[in-house]
Structures are given as C-alpha cells and as structure tokens.
Amino acid sequence: MAESIFDGALSRMNDASKYTTVKQSTLDRLAHAERELTVSFPVRMDSGELKTFTGYRVLHSSIRGPGKGGIRFHPDSSLDEVRALAFWMAFKCAVVNIPLGGAKGGVICNPKELSKTELEKISREYVRAIYDVMGPDKDIPAPDVYTTPTVMAWMEDEFSKIARGNYPATITGKPVSLGGSLGRSDATGTGGFYTAAEAIKALGKDMKTATVAVQGFGNAGYHFARLMHSAGATIVAVSDSKGGIYSKEGLDPDKILNAKKQAGSVTAFNNATMMTNEELLELDVDILAPAALEDVITTANANKINAKIIIELANGPVSPDADRIIDEKGILVVPDILANAGGVTVSYFEWVQNRTGERWTLEKVQKRLKEIMVAEFKELHMLSEEKKISMRLAAYVLGLKRIAEAFEAKTG
Image 1 (cartoon, rainbow, N blue to C red):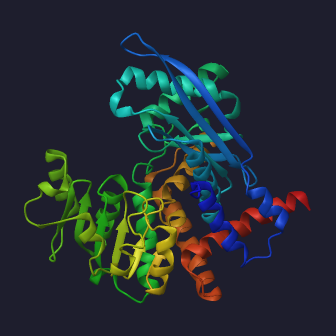
Image 2 (cartoon, one colour):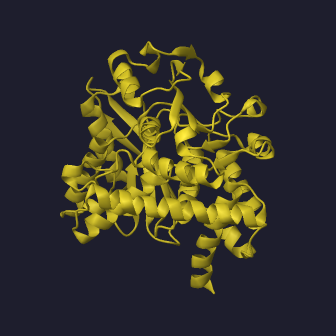
C-alpha cells in the first residue's frame, strides 16, 4: 500500500529523533493528532440546489500554544492531507520559535466554480460547523490555498456573530481594515528573502553577483524576486504554469508582473528567451527558488539540478527520495518549514496585535520578521554543521527538540 502523506511526514520526525534524546513516549504522542474533526454542512447554491460539503479541521499539537494553520478550499482536500499539514505547521511554528501549535483545515470544493455568494455561504457554514474548536486560545485559522483575506473576514464575522462579541484574534490573514497586519501579503516572499541573504553569506558569496531563478511567479515568488532584485541580485529566469522566460542580463520583476497582469502569464514578456519549467529548474544559478508546487524536484531530475542554494518557498518542492541526491551534490537547501515560515510568523504578529489592541507599523513588522528568520537560519545552519546533517534534517531536529521540551516539561 502506498505511503500516506502523513506517514511521510512522520518519517521526517523519526529520522530527526536519532539526533536527539527525546523520549519514545514523546514521539508516540507526536505521532498522533490531538483532535481530528470531519464535518458536513448543506449550502443552498445559486441554482436553488441544496448541496452538501465536507470539511476538516485537525489540531496536531497545542503543546506550545493554540493551534495555528490555514484553511484550504480545494476539490482534492482530504483528511490525510490536512493531518500531514497540521503536523508540519506544528514543526514550522517550533522552528521559528513562536508560541503556537500546529493545525490545518480544508473544505472539499472548487472555488473556481463558485459564485461569490456561494463562496461566502460555504465560508460561514464551515465556521458554524467547527465553531466549538475555534478561538484565540484554542485554534486560530488563516488563509491557505484558494482562500483569501475576504474569506477570512467572512469567517471572523461569523465567529463573532455566534459568540456575540468582537473576536479579531480568532482568525489571521484578515484585511488590514479588520485588524489584519501590515506586511502580511508579502510575508512569505519577504521571509524567504531574509533566509536567502543569510544562505548567500553562509557560502561566502555576494548578493550583488548572485544569479536567481524563481519557479512560480505568484505572490511569494514575485515578492521574493522583487526583494532579491532590489538587493542587487540578477533574476535570470522566472516561470508560471504556462512556461518560463530567461535572460542572462537579468529581468525586472515589476516589468514581468505588469506583463503577466495584462496577458495572464510571464511568457507574455517579450525581451527574454522562452523556456520550460523543467529547463528553469536545471539552470546553473546561485539560487533556485521553487515557489509553486510540491515535488517538482524528484529522482527523475535531481541529478540535473545545478543551483548552489535552494530556497523552498513552496511546500515540499523537493521529494523525500530526491533529498539524498540533492544533499550528496552539496546543494544548500533552506527547507520549507523555515524558508516559507514568514507567513505564519506575521500571522503570529497579527494575533499578538489583535490581542493587545496594538497596530504595528510596517517597519516594526519587517524588523521583527527579519530578526526571527535570521536568528533561526543561523541556529539551523550551526546545527547542520555541528551534526553534519542537511538543513532539512536540522530543522526537524530543532523543531522536535523544542516541542519535546515543552511536552516533557508538562509530563515530567
């Protein structure tokens, strides 16, 4: 039988445990989610049809604080996927050392086929179904695949209506006008940029001579490319689902974004050479940033990867089987649970602001984000060098140690 996504996630933890003194009883506890909720709810569609939807909310761990994790609306959402994502969120929060646990949610639906009214009804009914497990001290949802600040606004409004109060700290990723944090929209790309700058320094290279390829020119990919370009690096290639473009002289991310907005793809930009996503991955560059899908680097192409550094802006862009090949090639990988943790870190800042009634400036948000991303990169890199293990394994070792310390402090 094929290994489940969650089993694959657990194997990372078990590999990491060999480099720690974590008790077996702690590992046994972390091999199970604290709570798994499957709900179903009817929604009256625009056609008049009454359609039933299935949703999930999994709290993997509240050992270090309330659950934290996004809600995705996707036709292929499943309990196994949500369970694995909740597990990863627990480790991600531990790696950036914020006092939150790991959770995740999903609803089986295709937002591309829904009207705005139908989307709002699903958002509100999902909150009604999981209301009892939500709250600023229990489990704090956020946006994920195909959910937006508007969806979060509907969800927070529904929760507050049921609770007969005002509870902005229940959900993060909200519009700024409703208590959302400044800096949240570009937080993933910004956090990735801070880790890339540290990785370049760790290899003794200079940002101003660095070449960069970005696969996936969505929100995270664009902001990462923009910041790298501003810092002096040369963006030689970018791509989206329709293909990629290459220029040895360098590309201006803002000009590429304008072309994409007008024509729907980066391939509409004229002053560049066309290339496939596969070709982009194999470029000889200093930094490769996979920012789109999982498993784009596998055993089929791992030997062809020529980058010096991989910044995992996407979740799981390097398959577990390809990890060993990439490691043997001496490529420095900044793993997803650090590289793309800027989003959850600024979500934490939003939660703090909502709970204290403060409004942080953009400068304060970015300063705090940089402090965390830089400090945890250095921690991981030092651990990786000390134990002679990959940065990914070091991330799981560090996350496991922090979660285990909290659990064992409570259980003796």
